[in-house]
Length: 230
Image 1 (cartoon, rainbow, N blue to C red):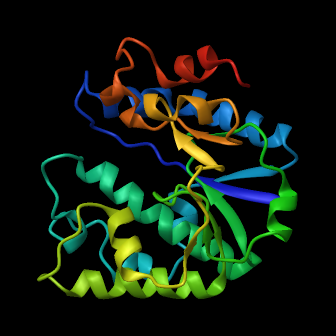
Image 2 (image 1 turned 45 degrees about the vertical axis):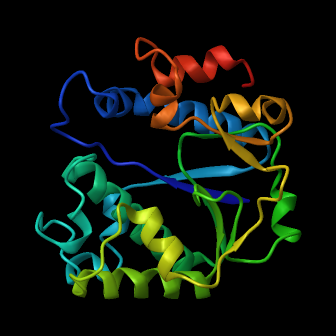
């Protein structure tokens, strides 16, 4: 069973920032991602910008235009980072159009127990976490995501801080499967979720690890390895 993720190098990030560290360590994290998902019976595929370019919206919506509506938020993330976030959505949509409903995840989501049989238990356009870092994407969801991107590119009166916020507010078909116990995933290292840490099949080691108290002297690959679940 295939599962997809996305990565592209982000050049010219400021040295010494958390996002610069994220970029430099990405290849190691991707290796860990592949290992953790393969161990659970999946065939992980990492898409890139070349795949995103196959989507018809790539040229139409001007993702390389720094003045596009997509990049209104100039205070937190670099242009390159935000551009990659939107291009990954194009890549996911294109893959599903070609291959049918597919589970996608951020490449810093490690799998410690989610088996391919989950596909038989959930409907397409189901999100396994509120941030949509793991989604079982179907064609209806693709159409809504692409439509949301198309409309946002033309509406300068609307503002969303990032792509996740745009998708959560402008798509209607996605069902959030996270229950009150957060059984599928949590973001490391939320201290309040420590009890769930031992049992969740998915853990998201995103860049916000550093703002949650993890030392910036550690790379995320070191954090994942030190956590000891791969």
